[in-house]
Length: 582
Image (cartoon, rainbow, N blue to C red; front, side, top):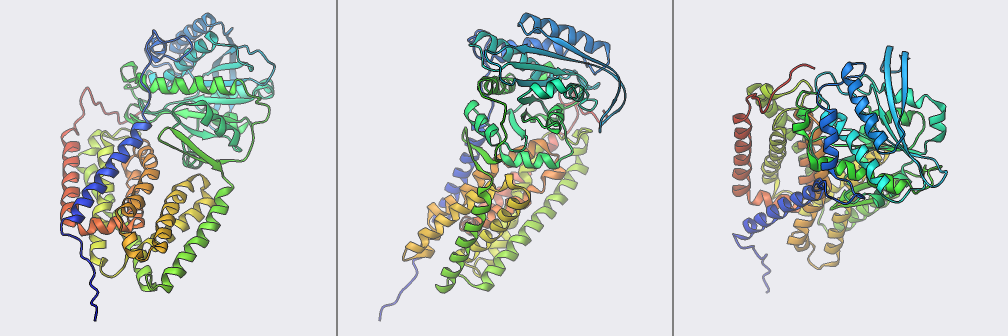
């Protein structure tokens, strides 16, 4: 009689593999964020044909000396400077003055406004491309980033365009007044029928911070040709369709909002790291990042060079799903997401039936997997919320701005992710002998599939977040089917690493933008997403649960160190001022 025994892994193997998985994930996250960093600033001696943030910086230094809200004497001085610079660039600037009653959805009062419009003539007679930013600031700060960096970037872009070969289309440079009071200058400009008839496309440039990458966060509807052009034009694209869909649901507006309301196609660019400086006296020249301005300016110049040579008379086409990965913008038609959802649902059902017939998946195990996943998400949110309440009451309130921006918020956001890790390790440790890997993988895939279907219906720009990880799981399970020992395959190091690495790569950019743009009271909900990713990647989660003696102390120690670092720095100072009112 032959006795079959299951080969037991060596005792040290889970710990070694855990360290390999953890190290690979940390490296992958680092590489994703590194690939999205702003480019190095170009010096004043750079070629006349390229954008140089050092050349553009002199404009910021002249514009952002003092706060210059619309209707003040300070903005008059800024306007004189801008007119002089645009005249020197050969843009033949014109003033569009408005003085009277202006009624919009944001505003209803008498106002005095002056927009500035310059033109770079093209060689053809096609519709012009409009590059736009605003030159007024809030009363509480000099507006170095919001939006003197963008205004200066457009001036430097105009200089580079004038130094190069003539484009087919005219390039209009519009600097609006009164944006901070409610997009007033843009409203006045686009109310003019002559502008609406002539303009082919709009690219707007903004800021909600003081550093970081310039990301394209908004487009008009029917953005297929715009996304294709953006992908071809820029050398370091940072954007995804989730941003666009989320922005539609937020109560935020820029000058591009007005252009879109008048039916013009367009793209919107901004940067948002360093949110603590936004609309405060810290928005000054000292807090301008040359690397960030280089990225903003390179985007402006690339968009001008590309779309300035295209026929802009009809840009509308099918919306696209898109995301950047290691410097490449991956995009495909949004209509594919419906077909993908149907096909993926069929593939998932096939795997359920196949593994059920092989007695490798049970109803009890799958339901337990779903309950554990949902429970970990709810518990992670609850614990993260309680942790944030303690942090805020203990010290974070002392370093939180009127806007909700908190110094060192990234530390607390990482803590929330670590809370999710701890919760999942503890819960899965409790059920590790009651469910198998296929049960858990199919349960996690079920939740991801439901999110794919829901996002396709309600938030199509987010569907890629679930499509690519599901595809990776399908590949892993297909490999298991073709193997004689499917359970060994799902526990193979390649599957363990791949099924966790792919979703982490897909969600890293989303987490980063969420962490820098939202207060911790909102971004703490990322712990639920982190729990979902961990449960979805059960082979890796099982490995972490087996290595709990290593994982739990490391995660807890990391939380303690991060909180201690935040607590030590939680005192306002001249270098870290706190503004509690506008």
